[in-house]
Amino acid sequence: MTDGRSRRREDTRQRLFVAAVELIAEQGFSATTVDDIAGRAGVAKGTVYYNFESKTVLFEELLRHGIGLLTADFRAAVAGLPPREALAALVRAELEYIRRYRAFAQLLLSEMWRTNREWQQTLRLLRGEAIEVIAETVRAGVASGDLPADLDVRTASSALFGVGLVVAVDWLVFQPERPIEDVQAALLGIVRRVAQT
Image 1 (cartoon, rainbow, N blue to C red):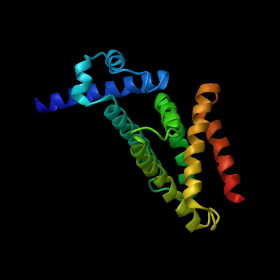
Image 2 (cartoon, helix red, strand yellow):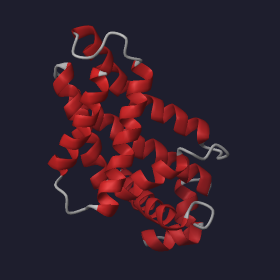
Image 3 (spheres, rainbow, N blue to C red):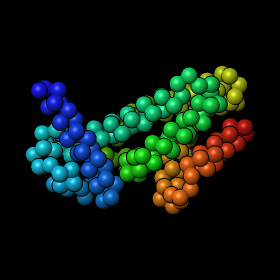
């Protein structure tokens, strides 16, 4: 019985996450109300407060959930691969993630530039975890000689994360018919050219 109840609670939380992401991506955090989220998720307003004490807590959990999924995708993509292949796998993983969670990616992109939010510290930490997976791959590339020895690992990793995010959102908004393989190849071409300079 407890297992069924916890599964139902997790399903409800997932519906709330999806509803919140869609609404906040559509109309912004401030304009989105708890009533809106409950309505979109198909639950009572009290259910939102039962699962999350406030809209801000819901949003912080939303960031944890979404960036946690991306970080897990990054880790799975690079597992056991040599650095050059791992970089290509990271680019592909980010593009696929953003295609799957487009509304969250748009939300993340807009929130990363806002420094006055209550959850900014949480976002900074979570972003750092995702970028660290890229940094591990870049460090391995420097160590193997696949990447220049004087490469600034932190900046390169941050750039790869940010460029991937912007390029993917641009692709999905303005060129959704373009095959993911083309976008991946173009992004990798840019990464490789920058790494060689």
